[in-house]
Length: 351
Image 1 (cartoon, rainbow, N blue to C red):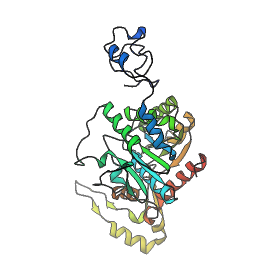
Image 2: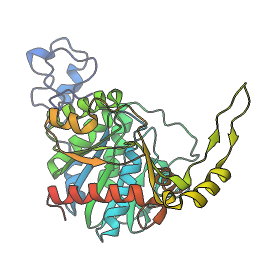
Image 3: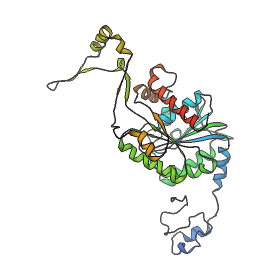
Image 4: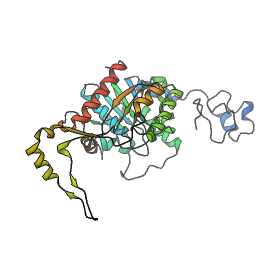
């Protein structure tokens, strides 16, 4: 495992272990009696040679952005996918790396299910869609329903392989979709990429406190490992939907099933108040009385990038593996995402 100082320390090591890569490994007083003492003393020392190979691969990548979340289900992968689509639409060369080893959803959200990785003389070739290069363990599973039941070292190994062996070519942006929380994958990606220069992390959350509690931990993680927080995105920030898209039900009484009265409501609106059909109805889904992500950002001293509404059309685009940009029906969420992405690029001089 790796401790907070990024030293490689075995799980059964003595207290004050100097780390397996240290010149003192197996030789210091702290190593006396450790079951790993002999192995550590004879193991090769110094930096991981694979880090040199990773640095060479990353030399052609201008910007590296981690997409993080404290909890699962907050729309992190949806944001990663739509950020990649948006950057590609701006004529940037974009790569999207999915390091959510146990729950890879990027192939689905990019419309790439069933695709496979191919080998070339330059290394593994990403799978491409709309000029976006995509890499995910999801492309390597014989059956998409197969569970990936791996311990930390094996997860770390595949992440290292993605960084070392994938030929991305010249990229303006490498977007890294990480799993929720702060676990092996996060420590590994920081360790492997830090020397190559990580621009920072975007943290995705929903407005309610139960999500923000874990986002605070995510911000703390970034500060501890020296990764700048580029900003926080509040996703699912209220339901926004055109009035004409709603389904209207008559409240049930006496245990009866609710009655669908959508046609009647729409007919009345068209006849009596057609101007209402152009309005968008907004409703809070999650309790944001505590100030939501914006207030948390002030308290934690990190940028707030903006809010994205809970938009059924965006959900549909993600399910279909398509961009929400350039689709009239996604106007509500697409405009919010565009504002956030433009703010990100402007604030960090990435344009």
